[in-house]
Structures are given as structure tokens and as C-alpha cells.
Image 1 (cartoon, helix red, strand yellow):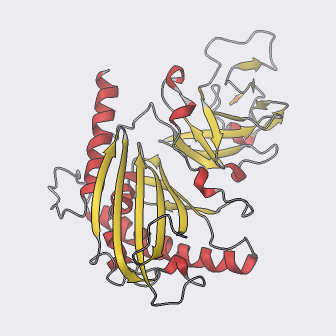
Image 2 (cartoon, protein in one colour; image 1 turned 135 degrees about the vertical axis):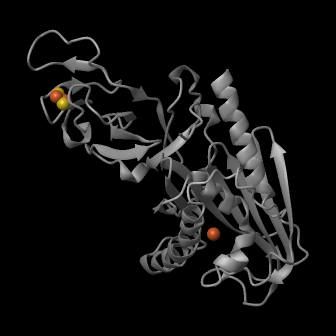
Length: 342
Ligand code: FES
Ligand SMILES: [Fe+2]
């Protein structure tokens, strides 16, 4: 059984996925979770399974800020408490269902599967960089992956794979080999950064810089447990200070386990241009090619190829470039153990 870190914020959905009166269901950490927006816009989150005969409440209906079970009509409030039994005035013991603390920030809905008393909103990783004035919402998506979420973390904290996996999209064209990599730990946050000076203008500068122009390029990845990653893709003219007219794309790569062997891979990016249908379609096409046609197949094939073996028991070779992923795994394991023994 996978041990999940419980006392942590996990991404449950993009804000725009949970709209109006809708009852939204998503499997998270092996459990069906119901999300909906109360009249005041605040998100409610609870187990999407009625306490009576286990019907999905998401198939039911809204009664104000409450949800009515589609099977026999038990009504639950936003804290999961049963507030109405259509067959008697009395509400039997054990009728309430589990609710979760939820928060919404930067266009992301977060939920907390652990002890509600410990849910501290200030611990939510900052993704405000996704919102650029005048550009509205970032371009975003969700890719399902048939692999444990930590294989996704390995992939993201080790961007050397762009030289091989992303040949068809934003291939590294040797930039990784021309660069240096460092992993820095600041408290509970891990940074896995690539610095590539004097390389050809990288793909995110397209349309802004003449192809072939020499630039200093960086890929700075920030990791927070369990698997929330922010990537800054940056470039300046070769030799310039990083603060001198940098061209930057801000990205979110946030992984939430659907269950032990399946992952929700949420992604988002800012654009280098004001939103417009053609530009958005082109950028989405490029990113989806990279994520769906390039990352997903190799990660899924890797997992299938492990034949159910344990990652560490199989004694993976260490190449140095995988330092970020390795440290994230170790940090997460330590946090999970501390929680289990605490
Ligand atoms: S299953 Fe929900 S009220 Fe019976
Ligand atoms: Fe990738």
C-alpha cells in the first residue's frame, strides 16, 4: 500500500473546473472526492460516497449549500454532516461523511486529506506567477498518467531528459550538455536548477528574439511536497544580468495521486503574448505534444517495465542528473515516516 503524506495540500482541480451549481467528482489519493462551490463561491470538499448505501453524491442535487443523495435523499451540509433524513425527524448516528479542508488560490483548488486542525493555508505553494496582468488565466490542462506520481516528480526534477524525450517539441539541442545543474534545499523547499549560458535562443523566446541569437538560459524548478512544482523558464541576452529584460515563462507542474498507480498531472503556463485563439491553440499544441506524446509514454512505459517492483529495492543507477528527484523522494519519505511515527 502506498503511504501518502496526509498533512499536505494537494491540488484537486483547476478553479474553472468547478463552476456554478455543479457537483464535481474526482478520485484523489484512492478516494472519490466531491467538490462544489457554495453560494458565496467558497469550495466545499467531502468524500463522494453516501454513508447509507454508498451512492456517489455527485450524482445527486443541490439544495442551497447542501447536497442531496440521489438514492434515498439524505442531505449533507458542506461540512459533511447529515442535516436531513427524509424518512424520520431523527438523524441516525454515523450518518455524517468526512469532509476536507479546501482552499482556492491562484486559480487552483487545494484539498487537505490529513488532520483538519493542521491545515494551514499559508503553507500552500505560491503559483501567483501564473497570473500576468492583462493575460487573464494561464493556459492549463490535466493529463492522466498510468504511473505513480513520484515517477512524474523524477521526470520534472531531472530536466536533462529534454535532450532525449523532447526531440519532437522543445528539444534541448545540446543546451543541457552545455549547462550546469544544482540542487538547493531551502527549508522544506527543493530547487533543481539548470543554467545554460551562451546557447541559441530557446523555444519560449520564439517571435521575440531572432532564432540563433545567443542567450543565457535557465530552467529553475521548485518542488514542494508532495509533488507541487513551479518551473521558471528564463532567458536574457548572453552576458546580461538575469534582471535585464528577461523573457520568462512561468509554469505549474502539479501531480496528485489518483491512486497508487495513477496520477493527475496538472499543468499550466503563462504566454509570451496576450491571449488569443490562434496563439493559444499553437502553444497548447506544442505543450500537449511534449506532455502527452513525449513525457507520458516514457513515464508510463518506465512504470510498466518495473513490473510492480519497488523503486529502491530495484537499485536504480545514479547519474548525478537525477539528484533533484532523488532528494525529493528522500525528503518525502522522511516526511511520511515522521507523520507515521509522530
Ligand atoms: S445511499 Fe444515500 S441515502 Fe441511501
Ligand atoms: Fe518532459
